[in-house]
Amino acid sequence: MTTANVKGCERIYQALTECNRRIPAGIPREAACRHLNRSLAECLVAVACPEESDAVRTLCSSGGTALKRRQCHQAQLSLSVCLSTNQDQS
Image (cartoon, rainbow, N blue to C red; front, side, top):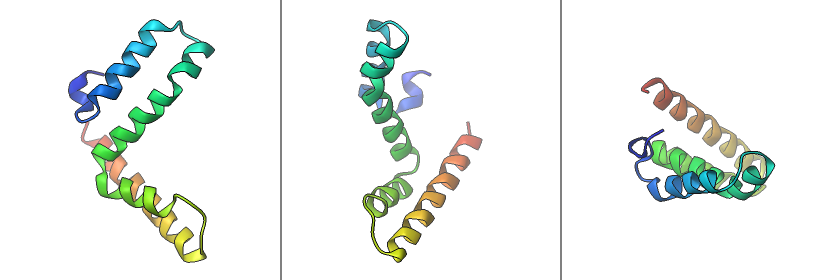
């Protein structure tokens, strides 16, 4: 993956690259770089599907009524479709 593929998430990508370079492979690296892996994944999803990502973040942030759970599930499905569409374009 090049930084061109992570447009909008370059700083997190560079930090993760540096973390992976500094720490030997295995459990220590997984533990030390976990937050950067998650942050990069969240950033890439938000860049690829901003509206759907925001809807999931808003609707699925906590429990709630049956309606909110259904809305959360629908938002997750919409995000999944958006990501699948973007994946097909690669």
